[in-house]
Length: 379
Image (tube, rainbow, N blue to C red; front, side):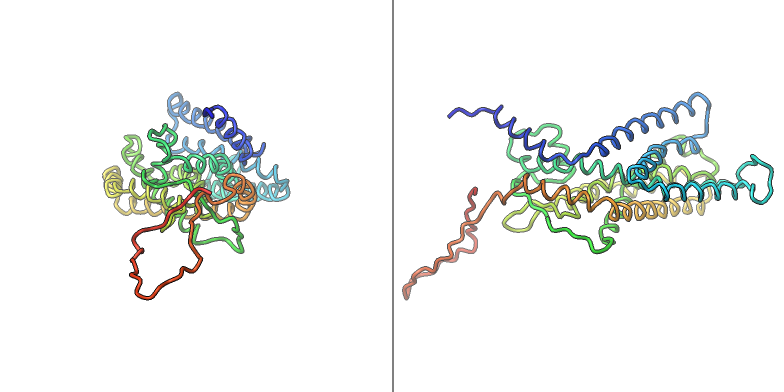
């Protein structure tokens, strides 16, 4: 019988349709995020180039997509009463920072940059963080089965395409690993917030933040800043994007997605964490660049900046992770598990063990078979 590749491709496309996790709302989240991110970045660049706006203050515009998506989530979940309370709380903070309640003239300026930071942080924690996690959940639904589908056949061909090379690099997959026998925990049930996983996510966030520090420390604009009064806002705006980079991979850790072998299983999350650690080798160079960038500033100011950055990363990661595990993960797992049984209905390899007792005769030489291994056959 002649092999027909089109027939295989058609069956593969049908299986891919069965494995889709994106709902209409998730697709809307990704579209709105892409559109608003493009718009906000364009507006930021336009203000800097055309109106000579301050870089630090202009960077706050790039946080816009998360606030829009946060409002969308409240509307989608019909939590309008909570949203009204948040708006009321924000208005009270706004009135106090402007001194209106204290009898000041209408339209006075903010009393300090710290007041605006307080208002911004409150709105992010209560609104923007839900936008961040909405993007994370949508990305997980978009890539989960696409990634495991590629990994399952990644080492069966002599030449890999670009997508396969990227995934192999990201998950640190050895070239001699038989990845066909994928497995995961299909009985995940949370009794409480998994603080161990939040610590893992926080650690990876700090690793990613190192690259952010290295990049901006080498930026001429950043190195010429003489005043650090606005830097916390600048850092806060950038850090909001760290969970979007780190948290999508947490689903591989939660479900313990792994390649089963005769010995120790290869866990996909350990692979991507190992890749980040390998890239972290220039961390000392990054810290050196930070110190060089701030050579004209007081050392205590520099340490305060670094400490503020670390504190903000921890707060943002813990906040978004808590929201994710409380409102989003259970729904995602409930959608993945039934489709996993379609993707991987049974283990690919089975071991043939001879459990029948053999008749032994006195004086028969015994051969040591411990180093011979075992044969495995396709089911």
